[in-house]
Length: 357
Image (cartoon, rainbow, N blue to C red; front, side, top):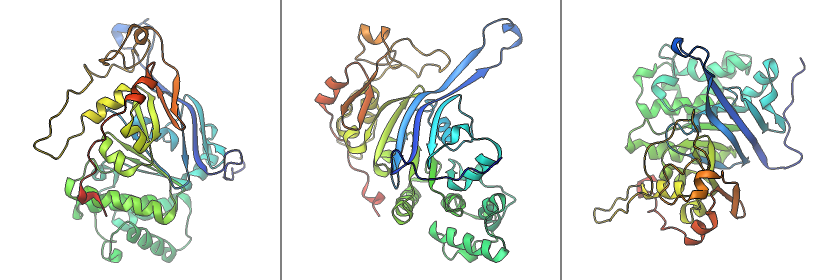
């Protein structure tokens, strides 16, 4: 099989990632007492489309179980999509298999949520960071690998790097472990990084340093990120664009500040209403949402959010909404998108001052 050589997209220059109608369904195996029953299907990702420019950070926000992490695993091809296109550097990587897919591994990397689990406890820092170099056949000599590892560790803010090379994960703090994980992603000079809840397992006191580090790396190397988080305040701080995900679909997507200030979907409004305000005298309004997230096995008819939406009308229960573009680059799945957009919303408080670099 001939190797696929990545190129920049010729149709839409400037886009590193162009995802079109991405679908991932998991079929559940029937139990003994369900023999003969039709198979059940989990619609984890059910028609997601987005584009990411060079140097752009896209935030993907939503509750647990909405399909954020599965989307990240799909675009890095850690999972095989059921259908859809993933145009990365001019090639549809959704169709790649075997050696062709392996050739793209050096161009995309993933930072996982839990640094306690994503690092092998038996690997030293050097071995953990150098492992992608060995797997992908980058750097021929030990000296070359050492040079690349030290550079990646220093880029990740671990200085002096040579003092950490022989340490094991249990000898590092949580923040240091996540920085080692970031260095492992950087060591192969990727063109795209998926960061899956990279600060949710860290103490609040060190989250700011890790977030600012990723912003500095984006600035320094022009690396685009898909930044997955359940915290819309973190997404606002990190992202140029925000995609709000609900039950396997993007309920709303657009420029970050516009989505925050003029949300056009009631689910986005509910997420914003739940953002804590560091003011003891602040009076919270009632969060406009009810009930629990429905099962992705039994998707509600009509609008997927209508079972929890306090604004739902009869049309929401019967007719699935189409994408509505309320302004250039700002689209949502809601029958009353223009009404919500015209009303606007109070902008949540700015990120804490300690987040600022």
